Image 1 (cartoon, rainbow over the protein chains, first blue to last red):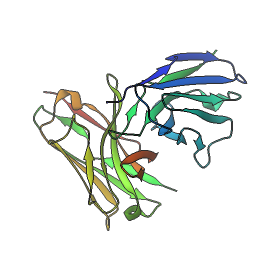
Image 2 (cartoon, one colour):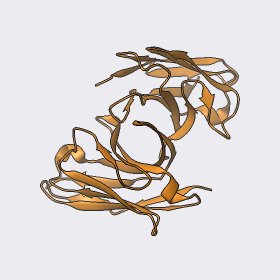
Image 3 (cartoon, each protein chain N blue to C red):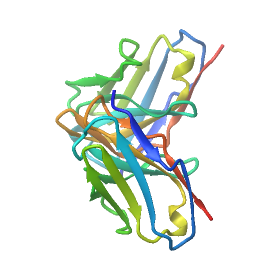
Image 4 (spheres, rainbow over the protein chains, first blue to last red):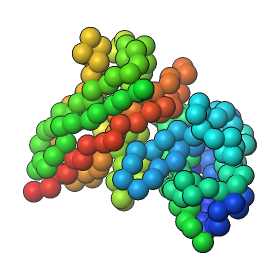
Length: 107
Length: 121
């Protein structure tokens, strides 16, 4: 199975900060990577897929990059609505496996 | 707007069975693969099963293979998950999701709000 490791587990930031979350795969997955946002008590929401393609309706302050085994999610200017937990998911094989999540908190 | 509503969760003893349903609306159900994903405090998010748009192909996580069966009724725009021989480790919030399938690769576009399954005596 492909393991996905996110860092950091928790991130504290101010509104307006540039924020970067890293996701590493235990083996190469090309660009078969998605990012999801989850708020407390809500279902995950797809933000990006194919590592860098923005899902329709998602604000352009979200961006993704990477290929192979290392990927990043960047929020260019953190907004109050962005405080949530973010998950990466590889969908190269095995139905897909998720990272453990990164919680973005208000500083 | 895509709308997915899960139901059928509840408390069941180990070894018991449960059938989850997911009523879909707002999109052409018969054109899309569908999937079940579960979330538990201990194991995080875990893909469970996917079914192709026609229902002709199904995929399962090793942890549920042989115990769970995914199916769909396209005229009724409803997805199902029959869960048998339930174990304590199956306790989780179960989400259905509209999926995009690229070959055997699946990503989850839109999720329902989930239904809670608790396996305990």
